Each structure stands twice: as structure tokens, then as C-alpha cells.
Length: 487
Ligand SMILES: Cc1cc2nc3c(=O)[nH]c(=O)nc-3n(C[C@H](O)[C@H](O)[C@H](O)COP(=O)(O)OP(=O)(O)OC[C@H]3O[C@@H](n4cnc5c(N)ncnc54)[C@H](O)[C@@H]3O)c2cc1C
Image (tube, rainbow, N blue to C red; front, top):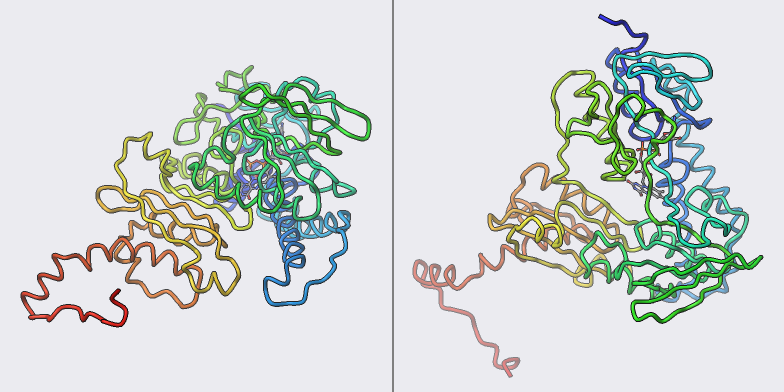
């Protein structure tokens, strides 16, 4: 039997790779981690979740400052932002988290960390800077990069992606965002709030096109009310560099053309899995649209080569990468055949308010042929939301025929946190009546979860059948009629 230097080798030191590396080393596997950048942490830490959420927080505070009167406070003249200071704050937050993801910490855990661009030279061996490293099992966790589709003139015109947007020298006066997915939409609101004039262009007819239209439209209306201009259902005919300005020529579904000029273009048109240059196809690993094709145990067609995270091209979220990393550990280290199951997968778009979901939305339920009923609750009916000045939004619950929640969507304050209760409900098979009868503290925004469950149950409890039964058994006399208010 062939012998290898390492039990497991991991390529990519982001959310997925670091999960596998720490788990494997802690379980006593001889672990190698290869990262092409100078630091560990991946996109989530350096160019994704952490900088974006830090920026969004800063933009929210600035937005509150501009709207103090809403809270009964004196209005003030707010000076323009200095984007370099915002960048400094982003860098300082990243630096703190970087300590958790440092080379030193992983070495202490027992992981051998090396930096550079590896290439597979056979199915168990990579070459890096003239050295070779062999491992019995490998994990591809190289993430994804911003996709820059072949729009005429786009590649020749200076533009930015998520790699640059958090680290700019100054706030763009006009920001043209191409792509109305979660990244484009989060950035649209944040930059509009910070003082840029923001345009969003997408060929789809709705923003956040994986969401139900009614929920996505709620987000769009909110952004429009803050000043963001949308061009949906639009095809980009040409992008031009005019020197200190850039121009985008669009055509809508009727063929009408519009020209938009701006100083910065942000391309947020989806992601491409990072598989090029690794020599994967050369050793026989099957790819599909650049993504490593895996089964539900995260194994590629070469069963000793696993993949997890954005590189498999499915659920491109940090928590998906962590979950898939844990599936890899089960299969590759424990050798237990654990399968990934995304039935109760939660997600969130961090606009203010946020749009979060778990399980199926209406679109997915219809596609799966599931019969469902819809139950909603508005944030304007939640006492705490009113006190917070956060009364925008709605919670939408889908129940199946067995009265089990199959999906929840929440557009409202702290929706990403509110969804966590549904994570427990759905993962723990908790019934709607258990949730409705559980005591929630008053006044909290989270009471909305209990209320939507209660609104469904109240149709049963306060039904005519129950009333007739109570009258029959206990001789109840029926409701009083209040003459003063009867007309
Ligand atoms: C602007 C933005 C905001 C986001 N916000 C959120 C959010 O709020 N919540 C959320 O869940 N997700 C969010 N995401 C998505 C999230 O960042 C990704 O899903 C997550 O980073 C995927 O983790 P990963 O380990 O697969 O890839 P990554 O974290 O990108 O890690 C991959 C690593 O592999 C390295 N690598 C690449 N190629 C090679 C190679 N050839 N050799 C060696 N190393 C290589 C990379 O340098 C990187 O360190 C956001 C993404 C963006 C762009």
C-alpha cells in the first residue's frame, strides 16, 4: 500500500478549509493546509462578510444621524464621510478576527501551513515551489472569485469588485452597481446611505432573484425610498471609459436605451469557482461550470478528493462552507458516511432591515409540488418594533398539509437573528403549537415568531366548533354585545 506524508491535505484557507484543518488536526490527523494568499481567512474575512457587515453598520449609524428627528431628537448638519476612516475601521475589525485565523494558531493546533500556488502532479501529490507534498486524502476549498461576464467594453473599462470596494481611497460620487444579487443590494443601500448616488442594473426583472417576488419587492421599495435608482430587465449594450467618468449604455425590455454616467462601477454579477491552475482536470477530477462536482458526502469522482465551500458552486455562504467542511471531516477522518442535507438551510441579506429565510420559499415549494398555506405577521403590529422605529417589514410562514413549517421568510429588523429561532424549530422538529405556547419575553422583536405561530393556532382554538362544544358542555352564555360600539 502506498504511503503518504500527510493524512489529509487541504487547499484553501477560508471558511471551508479552516474548518477541515482545525477539525482534522484536533482529531490527530497529520494535516497540511495550503493557501495562495499571504494570510489565512479567505474571502469571508478579507473581502466578504466581515468588511461588508462592518461597512453596513457604519452606513446605518450615519443614516440614523441624518434622521435624528424621527426619534424625537434635534436634527443636525451631518458632515460628509471620509471613506479612508471607514476603511481603517474595516481593517481594524478584520485584524482582530485575523488573529483567530492566524498561521500561528493553526500551527499550534498541529496543522502544517504553507503558502503558494499548488498544482496536482498526480491524484495524491501536489507541487509547490519545487517541493512535493503527498496526502492520502485531499480537500479542495479554494472558494470563488467575482465573475466578470463578457459585456462589451466592461473588461477594458476600469471597474471594481468585492476585492476593492471596502478599501477605496474615497467615497464614489456616483456608484453604478451591475448585479442585483445580495452583494449588489447590500452595497447599494450602504453606499447610498453614505452619500453616493447609486444606480443598480440587472437583466432580471426583480432584485434578489432567488427570493419570492413579494419579499424582494419590499426590499427594493425600501432602497428606492432611500434614493437608489433601479434599472431592472435591462441589457447592458456597452460600457465605456470616458476618462474620469464611466458610461453604461442600457436597453430595457421595450428597446428603449438609457445612458448612465458614474465615477465607479461595481461588478457584482455572481461568482466563479476557483479551480483553474490546480491541475484538477489533468488528474481526472470532474468539473461542472468550473465547480468541483461532488456527491452529497462532498466527494468528487475521485473518492479520496473532497471539496467544500464556494468551489462546489451551490450554497455560496460562509455557514454553508463551515457545514460542508464538517461533512468532509465525518467522511474523510471519522470515515462515517455522513450526507449533506440543505432542507433547513438559512440565509440572510444584510440590508437594513434584513431579509432572511430558511427552508422553502413559495417559489421552491411550488417547484417541489408541495401544498402549503401562508401565514403572515407585520412588524408594525410588534410593540418593540414600534418603540425601535423599525416598523417596516413582514414575516411569512409556509405550513405544509401536516401543519409543519416548511419555510420562513422574514423582512424586518434583525431578521438574520430572528431566523435562528426557526433554525431550532425546524431542525428540532418543534411543533407550531409548542412555539406558540413557549413564553417569549415582552417587549421583544422576537415575539413576532410566537405571534405568527399563534395566529395560525387561533383559527383552530377560536373556531365555531370549539365554541359550540364549550357552550354544550359548560353552558356558556355567549359574547356580550356592546351597544355603544355596535354600529
Ligand atoms: C461582498 C461579500 C459579502 C458576503 N457576505 C456574506 C455573508 O454576510 N454571509 C455569508 O454567509 N456569506 C457571505 N459571503 C459569501 C462568503 O464570503 C463565502 O461563501 C465564503 O467565503 C466561502 O468560503 P470558502 O472557504 O469556500 O472560500 P473562501 O473563504 O474564499 O476561501 C478560499 C481560500 O482559498 C484560497 N485559494 C484560492 N485559490 C487557491 C489556490 N489555487 N491555491 C491555494 N489557495 C487558494 C483563497 O485565497 C482563499 O483564502 C459574502 C461574499 C462576498 C463577496
